[in-house]
Image 1 (tube, rainbow, N blue to C red):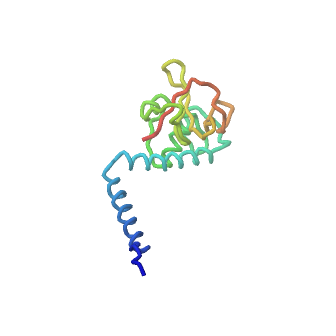
Image 2 (image 1 turned 30 degrees about the horizontal axis):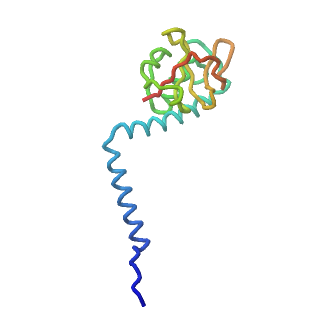
Length: 157
């Protein structure tokens, strides 16, 4: 009989894979950007769900919840509940976010509506070119299609 090649046991292969996984995970804890992106993704998903949960809440200028909102009040409230701080106004929120291209946007990112260089409205991107937002007096928090291409995108850090 000829000698058969030695094949590592399943336990040996799993042990090696676990050691590699542990090394990769331990290494990533020293790279702040990776941790921050993971935390931001979690917060943005939570903020999106919180905003969606406010569907039907009436618009009120200057309101930050929990039962009435203006546009930046809804984003501030949603992200605060998700563990992130944002400034009060849409323009200040834009300045506080990491700016993104349209192709880089993800659900939970903020969508800023602008006229020239002035930001005048904000909502939370829900995917499929839609946002959750508090539109204007007489309206309530709703999911709506983005109606213009004059928007900028930002990711809460």
